[in-house]
Image (tube, rainbow, N blue to C red; front, side, top):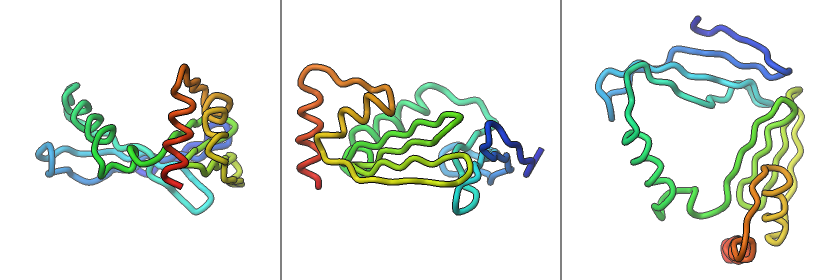
Length: 141
């Protein structure tokens, strides 16, 4: 139901009717999922009601993973949501937000990024990838 709120594991969520998209698929109605955050409601996902196809996702994924204009090619960006915390690594800034709205942030040294990816996000880099990531992060700091 539009605007209905629910709490799960201490996290607040709501669904709202969105707008009609006319840019990439004519007359597509949307639903938006919002999460309650420390500063109010944050839109997390948008759902369309029409049928979508793999190519719809492949084009967007290709762009965000390859374009120099994409924010995802300029720094590490990872999110992990669980019942106890939302963890976000944006470049070298690690932020942990709890269901009660409290948040803590810290800046990592570039050499700490591969270990944080493994420990906090379950992403284990192998071979030369940890060293390559450290150099990539250093070059952008």
